Amino acid sequence: MTDEEPPDARDGEEAGGSGAAGGAGEVVDWRREFAEEARTERPDLARLCLLIGAVADPTVTRHDLDQAEIELDRLAGLLPYATRITGDWAGELAALLGRHEGFEGVPADYQRLESSLLHEVLRRRRGLPILLSVVWMEVARRAGAPVYGLGLPGHFVVGFGDPADLNLADPFAGGRAMTGADAELLVASATGEALDRSMLRPAEPGAIVLRVLNNIRAWAAPRPERSDVALWAVELSLLLPSHPARLRYERAELLVQRGEFLVGAAEMEAYARVMEAVDPESATTIRRRARAARARLN
Image (cartoon, rainbow, N blue to C red; front, top):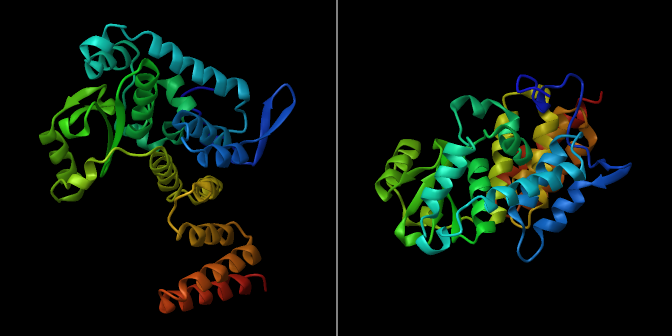
């Protein structure tokens, strides 16, 4: 597969099935594995992101996921052991992952589904800020670094040590060091508002994975021919222990869009019952849309 022919562009092939080849004739339910991992006491971020890729691309096998984990281990092994003493994790990771290995991003990466799939990011050395940050975090974690992810509005970065110190780096820019002032400027450019201290809380794995899936949904939204991608991204989001309730309604809308009118209408009505107590007006609107969906069968 070339860079000019990403997995999301294959003619006539729908990704996101619940079962796929795991290798040697094995049929794997990647969604079940995703749900089980998401509900563990300490979810493995790399594994969750790799399982997203397995759901997205039916050609992915268990071997491919193992190779991706091996690559993360290999990269961690290239970090100088002395970094544990010097503490210059940001500098050493920028040298290794940014300059030597070539992990970085460009604006065109936002137009590719591959940029949100960890196994493809490891292969191409290109991706969205959050996926490049996942690579940094997983390599650093394996090497023993006190690393965390920081989900600033409009951009994801990584930090090291005490979050109060704001020792930050931007993997999308090859590991460019960031100061608190840089973070404030980034937030201001994305939202027009000042940096709030609540934005500086380290992101938990579940929140990171939900944001990855939100990016995939955003990629699919202006591409109605890829409603299959939007659907599996919503369905994986619903498997996370914490997710916005409105995703249930979004799933119903996607089912209707894909011609599954009865199932979609039933799910709209179920969501309307939930909404009735908090927003009766919205519940009425949703029921009206459910009736319209059923009417499309006539």
